[in-house]
Image (cartoon, rainbow, N blue to C red):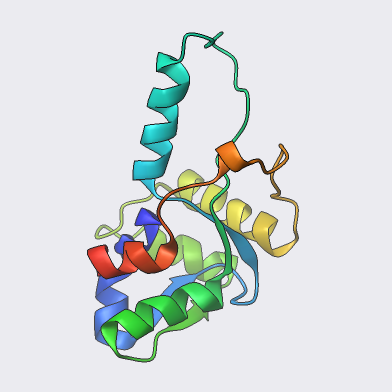
Amino acid sequence: MENFLWFTAPINEHGIIPLPVNKKSQTIFNSTDDIAKRAVNWIAAPSWTGKIVDEIHGELLSFEEVSGLIGQQLDKDIQIMELSDEQSVESYTQPHIGFSEHYAKLFNELHRGIDNKVLVPEFKVTAESGVQEQFSSFVKTKF
């Protein structure tokens, strides 16, 4: 979820979230707070063996739904601006963002994996793998 804070300037200035992903694509969104809490619980548990036992499953949303939640909070129309891989590399390697070209290409690969449904959960969703913070509450506190 916190990755959307990178887009504060284009959201406020142009009403866009520029990403190399289709707005209809869906993925699971987690808050870093939920990740940290889960990690502490795993590590502090008497049964911890040092092995991953499950994964955190956040809220399944499309990027269009995310832009809608942000727009609702800011009371303005926010759209996903789908970048080509080339546009993304050019944009994200600018000094104000600072990705290396290698990282920008990996960023594209991640988003294309979401588009192509290659990036999927590895473990079954369980009651324990859920999260506390929904995207709507994240937006209310961070935007």
